[in-house]
Every structure is written in structure tokens, then in C-alpha cells.
Image (cartoon, rainbow, N blue to C red; front, side):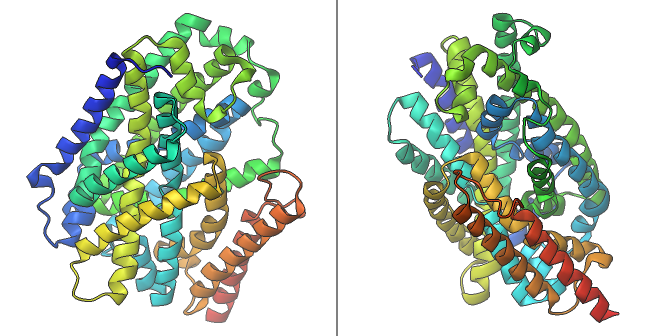
Amino acid sequence: MAFTLLDWIPLVLYFGMLGWFTLRKKYIDHGSDETAYLLSGRRLTLPAFVATLVATWYGGILGVGEYTYTAGVSQWLLFAFPYYVFAIVYAVVLAGKIRSSKALTIPEALGETYGKKTGMLGAAGVFVLVSPAPYILMLGVIAQLITGSDEWLFYSVAVALFSVVYVGAGGFAAVVRTDWLQAVLMYGGFFMMIGFAWQYAGSPVEMWGQLPELHRDFTGGYNLSYIFVWFFIAMWTFVDPGFHQRSAAAESPETARKGILISVLFWSVFDALTLLAGLYAVVILGPELGNPIAAFPELAVTLLPAGLLGLFVTALIAIIMSTLDSFLFLSGQTLGRDVLKQYVTGVNPVRLTQIGILIAAVLAVFMIFLFPSVIELWYVIGSLIIPAMLLPVLGIYLPFLRYGKGFAVWSVSGSFLTALGWLVMGVQTSEELYSYAWLGVEPFYPGLLFSVVVLLISRLRTR
């Protein structure tokens, strides 16, 4: 990717604006007030709620491009539709209850409902769930394309440290302020890309006729077991700390409910844009693309003139950064407030969160060595953590799913270990790279089954 001076201008301006939005004194003068630092005083308005939720939910943009380039329209079935369903359920059933609760975080709510041990296990699960590792990896890939250097890790670390500074200084208010800018860039960048692709390769109808048969297959050639795993992984929404944080930060329960429903409409538009861009990449770039994760950047190189290329790459970076800064903040909050605070006394709780943010960034860089694929990172994290967290978190707000005393600890720990053991056996017995199914069963299912069995035993014992 040959970046000219015109291409560097929007990128430099973007990072400059991030710093300016964040480091203005009024947004860092939160002192030791946890509620102000973590939730902006629980005064998040409806427009700000929608902007920050919409922008944050799309950090895996290169993963979406990777999947669409390799498997076509099934991207919508696996990565769009299930999330609409569960987001709507979340808005109707959970959002208002979360805003009315005094608990600021998921681990705190788990601890208040089931006890300290469950709260600590929940903190560990949340910390892994919101790891910024996939987003640091994607930034490294883009940096490698821009600079032509093999030192992608250096650039990933540099951006991660930049995020540590502005997120740690500004808190949740910094995340929300920068998400406004990032939401504008993400939609503008992809509308621009679709316009150029339409001109180059014809209308979407003409493009559809040029696609390989696999890419027009609604299932992408995958079996139902694999598809259902991704559908269940979409239950990630129910235990997603970002949803919980924004619902808790809303100025009212009604704002939380309406904000999520409006966000679903915005997501449907952006999913259409990314799907079209990915399919155009298949037709325009052909099957020779060596690294599918670079499908969107390579499409931009092929279609866009100098200046606009830099603007689109800046949009990609903004989409990733919107989730990176949110997940980095949530990771630091979980480690600092929900874990370190229990053992460290006499230290400003805001300072503990800032320390947690730095540690989270370092651990995320380490994770990308273990799983150098965005899709695999999502799959592994989702398959291990979602089954363990799903029912205990839902039980906080839905009494019929609530565990009896002592049972939640066994459910969280046992479900995680069951899924992990199943995943390890799948890796050991399979001859395929990144195959985790053992005996033809994905690890998500036995993990969730363990959690269901413990819940049933708990309900019978309670009665």
C-alpha cells in the first residue's frame, strides 16, 4: 500500500483529534469519583448512547472482511442476524433492569447476587471476554500494509500505548466523545467505497452474477453445528460488558431501551455496506489474495485515488479503535476495580483502573502470538467464556434462571473447564489447523450443557 502525503493527512488529523477530544481539562477532571470516571455520572443521553454503542460494536471490521471474502453472504447469517435478535431481547428484557440496578459492572452484580467468589470468577471471565487482542492484531495488519514494514508488532504496541494514555486519562467520557468521530468515519468510509466499487464492477446485481457459487450459498458451505455455534456465540450480547456499561450509564431506563433498538437499525445499514464491500472484493480482487484479513484494505488500494485511500484507511482504523478503546477501558476497569480493589487498600480506585488498563494492553499483545487470526480469537474466547457466564448473568435479572447459594460458583468454573477440556481434546485429535470439535461436537455445547445441568440441580435443591 503506497501511502502518499495526501493519504497521511486524514490519518494524522484523526489521531490529533482523538488526543484533543480526550485531554481537554474538563474531560479528565474526574478526581476519585468512580461513577464519573466509569459511567460519566450515569447521564448518557440518547444520541450519545447510540453513537458509542454503534461504533463500539464493529471493531472487528477486518474479521468481517476476512469472513466475507472467504465465505460470502453467510456473513450476514453468522455475524449480523443473530446479534439483532439478541440485542432486541436485551433491550426489552434487560436494559431497563440494569439501569435501575446500583451495580456498576457485571462482576459487581454477580458478587451481590451470588457471593464474592462468583464475582471474582465473573471478573476473570469478563477480563478475557473484552480482551483488546483482536483489535490490536488488526491495527498491526493495517500498519504493515501502510508502511510496507514487517514490524507490525511494533506499530500495534505503539497504537495500544496511545490508547492506554487517552483512555486512562479521560475514562468513559473519552470513549464516548471519540465514538462520535469514529461513527461518522465508519459510515462515510464505506459509503465512499461502495460508490467506487459500483462504478468499477457494476451494480450489486451485476456483481452478484460474477460471484463463485460458494459465496452465494447462504450457509457458506458450513454444517449446521458450526452455524449454530456462531448463533449461540451471539448470546455474547447478554454478557457483553459494553452493553452493560452503556445501559448502566444511560440517563434513564427508557434511554437504555430505546438506544439499543435504534442501534439495531444503524447496525443493519452498516452490515449491508460491509457485506457489499466484501462481495465486491471477491469479484474485483479475485481468488489470489494471500491474506483474506486484508480484503478491505486491498480493495481500497485497487479502487481509491490518493487522499481518499488515506481517508478510507483512517475509517478502518477508527472502527477498530472505537472497540479497542472501549474494550481496553472495560478490561482495565475489571482488573482494577473488580479485582485489585479487593486486595489493595489506600489506593485511589480510579488509579487502580488506570493500572489495570496498562496491564490489559500488555496481556493482549501476548495473546495475539497464540492466535494470530481475528476469527479464531473470537471463536475461542466465545466458546470458552459465553457458556460459563451466560446463565449466571441472566439470573441476576431473571429470577427463574437464578442459581441457589453456592451453585453459581460451580456453574461458572465447571462450564469453563468443560469447554476448555473439550477444546483441547479437539485440537489434539484433529488433523486440521484451528479445528476444536471433539467427537464432532463444538466445545460451546458441552460447556453450556454443564451450566444448564447445574442450574437444574440448583432449582430442584432450592425447591
